[in-house]
Every structure is written in C-alpha cells, then in structure tokens.
Length: 428
Ligand SMILES: Cc1cc2nc3c(=O)[nH]c(=O)nc-3n(C[C@H](O)[C@H](O)[C@H](O)COP(=O)(O)OP(=O)(O)OC[C@H]3O[C@@H](n4cnc5c(N)ncnc54)[C@H](O)[C@@H]3O)c2cc1C
Image 1: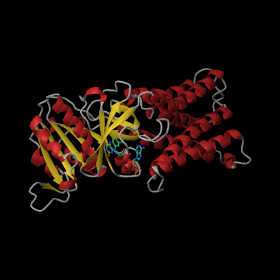
Image 2: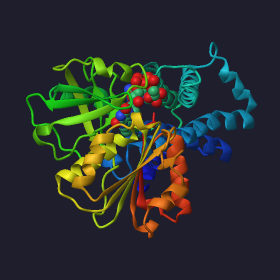
Image 3: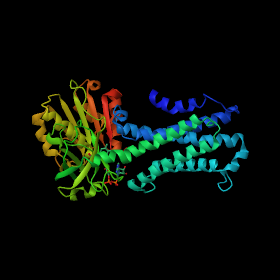
Image 4: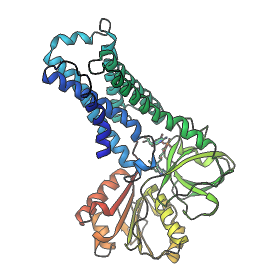
C-alpha cells in the first residue's frame, strides 16, 4: 500500500518543487491536485493488470482485479470532480464544454473524461449491455489508452504546473511508462509465449459437460506451477490476439515432462468448442499465476468446491497424492446431481492414496440419497469439520453466490480471514 501511495502521490508532490506558479484560490488548487492524482491512479492501473507475478502474488489475481475495479471508481470520481469544482467556483468556465469553440486543452480534458466514464459504464454493466467479453476487452484497452494520453495532453496544454521542462518530462515519461506496461503485456510477453508453444496430447471427456485438455511442451521444458494456480490459454491464433481464457491447472504439479492439464466446462462460445480441439493442435499457455495454493502442512486442509471449481482442488489432491503427503484433507463438493460430479471416480480412488474424506452435496439428489443435499452451508460445515475450525486451512472455489455464502459461513464459525483462500472465476 505504501508503494502504491508513493507511485500515486510522488508525481503530484514533485510538482510542488522547483519553480512554482502564482498561488490561486484553495478550491482551484484542490481541483488541480485531484485531477493529477486521478490521472496517476488511472495510469497505474496499467501496472496492476500487467501480470507481474511479484505484484500479484501476495494477494492473487482476483483480488488485484477487484482492487483495479474499485480504485477505478475513485480515480474517475477524482477526474470528474476536477472540472465540476472549477465550474462551481467559476461558472464562466462552463464555456469550455463547447467542443467547437473550446481550446484544444479543454477538448482533450473532455475526451479523457468521457473515455473514463465510458470505461466505467462498460465495465460495470458489460453483461447488461450484452457486450461480448472480447468486444469489451478491446474497447476497454483502447478507451484506457485514450483517457490517459488525452489527460496528459490536457495537462501539457494547460501547462500551469508544468512550466519547468523536467516536470513536463516527468509526466510525459510517466505516461510512456504506463502505456509501455500495456505494450509489455500485449507485445513483449506474447512474444516470449509464442516461442514456448504446447501441443494438445489428449482431449478427454469428463462428467458434467467438462473436457480435459492434456498439453505437452513443444521443444522446451515447460514451467513449474504450484497446485491451485492457473494459466491463460490461447487455443486459436497467436498469443498476440486478445483471446486467451484463464483456466486452473487440474493436473498434478509433480507431473513429469512439463505436462499440464486444464479441465474446462462448457459454458459459452469458447468453452462449448473445447471438445472439438484436435489432438496435435498447437496452443499457448501464459502462466502460472495465482496465490490459491496449499498452505501449512501441519493444518487440516478443507477444500470447498462448487461445480467446475473442483479443478484447482483436483490439482491440489493429485499433487498431494504424488508427493505421498498424509495431511488430513476434507473435500466438500457441491454438484447438481450424482451423474454430473466431475472426477467422481478419481476422487473415490484418491481416498486410498490420501487421508481424504469426500463429502458430496447434491442439489438434485437421486432417490434414496442419504448424503448432504441442497447447498454447502454453515450447518454442513459444522456437521463435517472437526472442532478447532479456526485452525484449519480453507480453500474455496465455485460460483460467486456460493463463495459469498461460504465466506459468511466461515465468519460465523470464527475462522479468521487469513485462514481461508478464495479463487473467483468471475474476476472479469
Ligand atoms: C482464475 C480463473 C480460473 C478459471 N479456471 C477454470 C477452470 O479450471 N475450468 C473452467 O471451466 N473454467 C474456468 N474459469 C472460467 C473460464 O475462464 C470461463 O468460463 C471462460 O473463459 C468462459 O469463456 P466462454 O467464451 O466460453 O464463455 P462466455 O459466455 O463468452 O463468457 C462467460 C464469462 O466468462 C468470462 N470470460 C469470457 N471470456 C473470457 C476471457 N477471455 N478471459 C477472462 N474471462 C473471460 C467473462 O466474465 C464472461 O462473462 C476460470 C476463470 C478464472 C478467472
């Protein structure tokens, strides 16, 4: 947080060194300050989403994206408040809204602000606006670049605080750095990924409309991942296209030869076609990412999965089994019905290799079912978890509503927040 605040505030406070323009009324200065701070926050968003492992690892990608969304609202609030304050204290400035008569510096300000508002509206209501993920993603990137560059041009055009050439250089340099981060994710990283392709070795059907892609490194050693992590998969085209989809690794992290598996449920345009991917197809994986991975071996591990949220749990269980780990593990696994339980047979087999208890919770149980039914609730947790709830290590992955409910339930069981790990599949 300190580093983050430093990056936001340092460029602002540096403007207060060197030659200073004549002081103006407090609200004018305040409005300028929040404009600069808003732009600095927007620029740093490129860093948050640049997939730097060291930046994201302590929290996990989903938390970083959550922060990215929340902090954007603050940044846009600051940027929008900047002209509003000026219009209130000096109503004659409203003339600057006339985009035909207004000077360029005001037009750039308008362009930047409108782009930011469009970014937020499209981000918050993407599904309501019926925008496909791909169309939204491309527009999101373009609008973000336009907003930041137009913001810089507005500042340079106004030039009130940027009279010193080094101050102009600082803000131009910062903007080049921010947009350069985007270049890193979209050009430099894909170029490295292109040189390390994978081949599809097998496409295996699983229960519950799910397919497992088995992929082997093609001409390189592959990478090592920790069980529970995920990668961005490109199946068609090159990694330069914005078409990669995130999937958890479902295979053991101890698998030989850099082989990785991803188990993919049919849910939309891309995933519905995964079963038709031909064996031998060249694919690309950008990874590994994520902080959702096994913790202290002394603690009992409680894995709570809903639907396709079982995939990272499979990687955790398969890895523990391959490593001969005997820590106690309980898997609470919510599925629609008995036939749709992905990996049902393998889970059964894993109980012989691990100190593993599997509790199935079925939404539509078959006749005569004596196990848990409905959803995983605090009562289900109480019934199956040994006492000392706060001492276990929890891993939760599944639909958002389920995860919210489980996190609340863990709260009622007195489990502190640092004892549970969540992987949200809907961070974008
Ligand atoms: C960290 C993580 C791990 C995941 N692991 C698995 C897994 O192991 N197995 C599995 O079946 N699913 C997993 N998912 C979900 C999977 O990524 C989406 O179901 C899939 O991308 C949907 O694509 P679609 O085009 O078929 O569906 P659509 O109907 O087009 O999209 C459904 C939703 O998926 C998301 N989405 C779509 N395309 C992308 C994309 N290119 N990048 C990011 N999100 C996108 C969007 O929120 C969209 O609204 C994971 C998601 C995340 C974030």
